[in-house]
Length: 435
Ligand code: AVJ
Ligand code: FE
Image 1 (cartoon, rainbow, N blue to C red):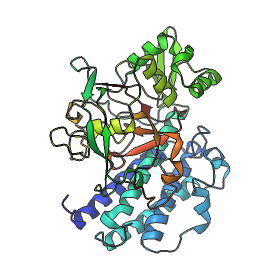
Image 2: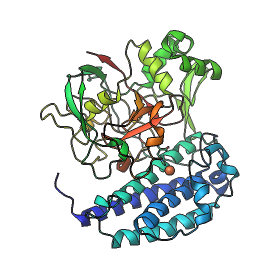
Image 3: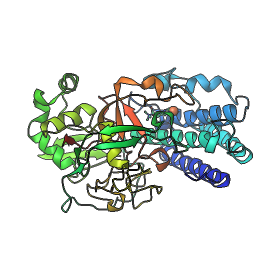
């Protein structure tokens, strides 16, 4: 790939940081101070914690690590260290108030932009190469913007956020599944300048032929699983998933409820009939896995997902996105909290892969069958706590990003992970079968 002009990189970093802060501002100004400091779920931090944590990470990496500055408020570091305090305990910490957190994040940002202006993005230390540290911090803020949107979804009370409807879509003229031919492909990347450590390095994998759903599984399809007694039939469930279903008496995805013979779901403070043509959302890995088994299918592996998303059969090359190497536009994918819900299955024809797979990027995170493991040649960078400490059989990989993810933190190689019991994240799935 051609080297990127340093001035263009600087502009790209500035744009990514600015977009992230605009989203953070919306998510932390649409509710009052009570809602910013309250704990809306033991699974989540108070919104004001995310806000100051965003500023603190930016200070640690852009002001201290890159520019060698002293800490602005060294006494707050431990409050905003995600490993020191579990989420449920964060409301009882002496956190910065909403006004203090805003002031702190703004002060850090002002100084960080000075650093961006005065720092060379060519060569130099690896942390700065191609503006990596700035890209990493923009991604970090956008990841917390997704986390904060999850907190908003868990918050009781009337809607505080609004967005236009996503584009329409239909599966009427689409095949149910696509055959991905067997053969090698290049997984991961060594070229994408802002790719995080767990996406690296590029390496070859042989993937046998398989069939993959053209679109994510819809609420309508998932409803057939429910109505066929899926939640009461132990045959479909992994033992730990079955135990979860029994213990919590699960009968449907999170935020669904049945009333007067109708399935309703609550979405950002608004209750509506379950939209049958929309990808199902708020299911755990265990539910996705059980649905797939009920359907006589299975979840795709992570490498199957990435091959479907990136492999170009015409050239044998792995591309950045299903549609090619171009950055995502609003024609390609439902990203960036532009719409606060997934688009119907079959939307975004311009975002299809060469084989015709739709909506791999955006809409809903897609559970894969794979454990979160390092690629051969993995090197933790720049800190072990981003990825390395999470590797192992406890976490399952999710791919493709949701409507809540910004494009800076979403690409064909991007890997997300979570515990298989998690349901509050914006996750759905699609299914596969051996060819
Ligand atoms: C990659 C989404 C699992 O939110 O725990 C944010 C991202 N890491 N701050 C998370 C992250 C540090 C991470 N996930
Ligand atoms: Fe973080």
